[in-house]
Length: 479
Ligand code: 6PG
Figure 1 (cartoon, rainbow, N blue to C red):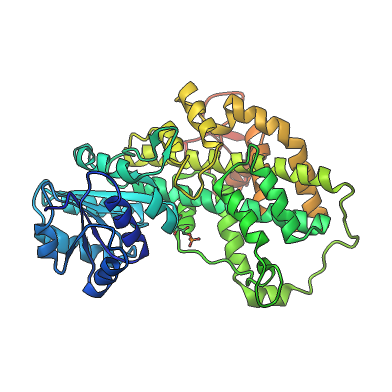
Figure 2: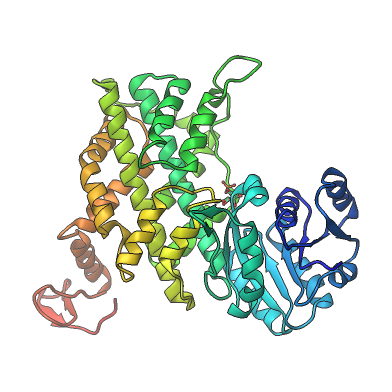
């Protein structure tokens, strides 16, 4: 028998994806790993899956029906290039190489271009959902050519998560589009996690509830508009008690958050695109701050508020935090979709925003009920300039904003860091402001650098002769 799909890389993500593929009607899966040992382990541990193992790239290529289609699941980076080189040397024009790792989208653009020159298709695809998602049904964000998607689409649809009968996969756009969208997904994931962490911290320090009690709060929240995978697992983590000490596990975990880079990439690229992704940026910075033990120790004697700042009514406070979380989450998504729109424009991708929200409803880490509202917002108005201005989201922040202000004020007065909550609120207030102090910044720029300014009352570009008689002259626009 020949395989219709192959997987390279038998670490946990690769083997789980291969098992997922093998479990679906119509797929026969070839598997390959640099060292055969790992392949053998997968074969031994999963006799139920009818894999075609290969011990060389030649054998792997020979076991695949044409057009040969292989998904690379190796650690993103240089390893990926080595596998691509090996596959291009044994594949033929028309075959399809898929990179399912968390590659940086600019690498994907580069690789796609190079592989295309050989006549082979290259598809960079985002795959979200962690190990369990890979096995049971992830959310899949493929880029690449439409031609490649004709072969690949049905295979990916067969393994993706399904919500309301719709598989969580769509052809995102050409070359790096899929990995770009996966990067933004991860950025939003960072923001969502940080917001939840701040909500937990505010509740814990405001009410004195135990982690187990707060777990119940999150379980309750998960029945409403915040319903999502991240809220659900937060309750699970908070409930966990360390077996040896009987202490809540969360109190024993070192409070220094790590990262593998996708959140940083999101912010770096948003900076280049000129898109304020402040919620995501604060989440990335919060992880960086947490991971500076020497600075934190040195600063630990700095004073907090002189007066303790308490909560009068626990239930009312918790409800305020819930609303603040929802409003801040809307900001994070609104910013994330702004980055998608800007990236699509910059790199020439035709990305359907509503479809992205649809494929994020299941399988991925940020899966949530709320994504349906995003799909609806873009269906109603495909040219929506900011998600937060869609009627549904406007109504949601209108209902939440007083609570949001209370919570941010509480955090400031109580000396509890809430960078994502407060920057999201500032973004909201900045966006809705009639006038911004950017006017003054323009004045300052013109003063020291003759950077010029525009006026609200007449056309043209102007400069004030600050070091002369301070009269104003028409100037050439220098931005
Ligand atoms: C997913 C996840 C996953 C990724 C981490 C990275 O969508 O399944 O985003 O791709 O491994 O979550 O996160 P860190 O940067 O926090 O390690």
